[in-house]
Amino acid sequence: MATRSRAYEEIKVYISATCSGNGRHLRAETASGRDAAAVDKLVLSLVDGEKVSDQLFPGATVWWHAHADEPPSATRGISRRSGCGSRSGRYHERYHAFVKDTYLPRIRREGRELIVKGRQRKIFTNICSVYTGSTWSHALFEHSKTFTTLAMDPARKKEIMDDLDKFKNGKEYYARVGKAWKRGYLLYGPPGTGKSSMIASMANHLDYDIYDIELTSVHSNAELRKLLIKTTPKSIILIEDIDCSLDLTGARKKKKKNERQRRLVDAGRTGHHQQQSDAVRPAQRHRRAVVVLRRREDLRVHHQPRRGAGSALIRPGRMDKHIEMGYCCTEGFKSLAKMYLDVDAHRLFDAVGELLREVEMTIANVAEYLTPKSSEDIPDSCLAALVKALEEAAAKKANGGNEHDVQDDEQ
Image (tube, rainbow, N blue to C red; front, side, top):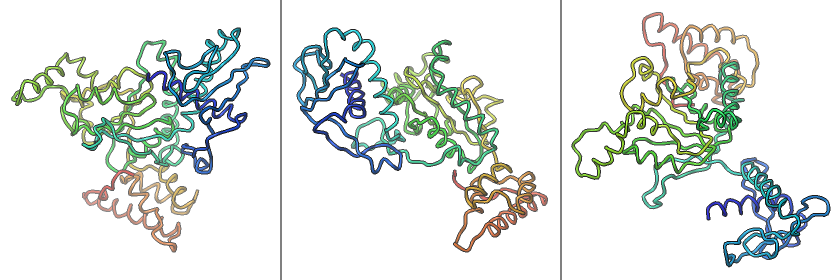
């Protein structure tokens, strides 16, 4: 039933986009795309009982009918003789092989592409209301951050974008080598260095949904597997500070209140290799990026691995690419100055660059100094305030103090 429903939606979108022009009675609905122009657009679809035509090729036509009633048998869909079903087509008998093997697969592909292009992406979390009973709750993902506006060294930014593109377009590669179509990214660095902005940029670049897993709400490997099974393809699985959340390996204290809890623990002990795989396996479907966020002080596990799900996730080979989100560099500062002040060059740029090589300041803090506080603020005053803050941090460092400002939340 689920497969038929998916096919119905794909065909519906294709017909609405391609064939609605020759229909006499159409239903107009608001477009659902993320594009700002979608607010003014209308999507046209067939009303019940309407009929439209689609050309296979010159001289060959398929007639599509829209019906509200359920079909009387399993022959729902496209028929050579009748128009039964919610959305069915009629065509000449001699075109049956062409329609079955070429036409229908093509319009389903085009329908899927149209659905992806017009869909509104979502961010999901497993912190759900007790009233809904659902595994995931969601909201629209409307974060505007992209790699274009991400403050980072251009060479490193391009390296990450190229890696994402290779993953996104890697269907044949993953099939050829026999690997699941997923890729793991470890993002690490202190607060305020842009990890959240990187996640949003990755999601917007890939055009993927985000599943943000709150591990404090997960009580076993089995429960985690159930969560992951209910995620969709083309998604980012986001896991934050896993070592600080809980131990998912099943190596828990043996004093449990009942036998059922003991069985849950035993289920997680199916083998060391299996439990590590369970921690990151996003079901058996395709196209997922697994992103793990870690604080900088936890990076010692790279050299002295601890036992547990966290060390399994970040050990060499588990996360395919490690991305360090460090303190603001000169190139990152220039990107911020362009975004916040709309300046490409200034007499204070050299001073800021020299000071950033001497002291460490997060991207979030630099952005705060570059944000005009009033209409009277101009590039001169904002840059002067940044220089002063950097000079004070440099003086503290020289006197043996802590050079870092109080860290802001993630940008």
